[in-house]
Amino acid sequence: MITLQQDDDGFIRMNRHFPDRSLIRITFTGGASEDFTGAQLNTVYDEALAQFLGQNRLEGAKGFSRAPAKTVHPTKKITVVKVHEGMAR
Image 1 (cartoon, rainbow, N blue to C red):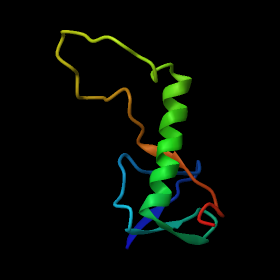
Image 2 (image 1 turned 135 degrees about the vertical axis):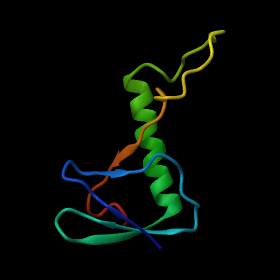
Image 3 (image 1 turned 90 degrees about the vertical axis):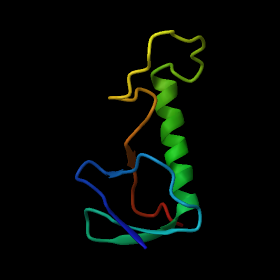
Image 4 (image 1 turned 45 degrees about the horizontal axis):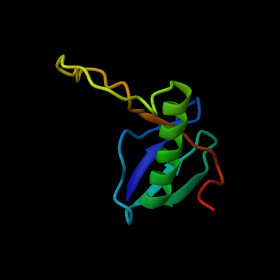
């Protein structure tokens, strides 16, 4: 089981998908905890990523640059996901 802690702003650190069948327990700032499957959190991550890309107008970016890609700070990726109690239901 993977254990994650919600920060004071309501986010958990998640920068990739978890295996679909893995069990993840999130402990919220209020002290409550809920169990999620990897598939549930992957859906939450995908929705947050789509919202991020849409707000920054990155979802339909076309074309390419011949310059080498900078890998220090990826621009089309998120590292935190907002969660709240009751999401596992």
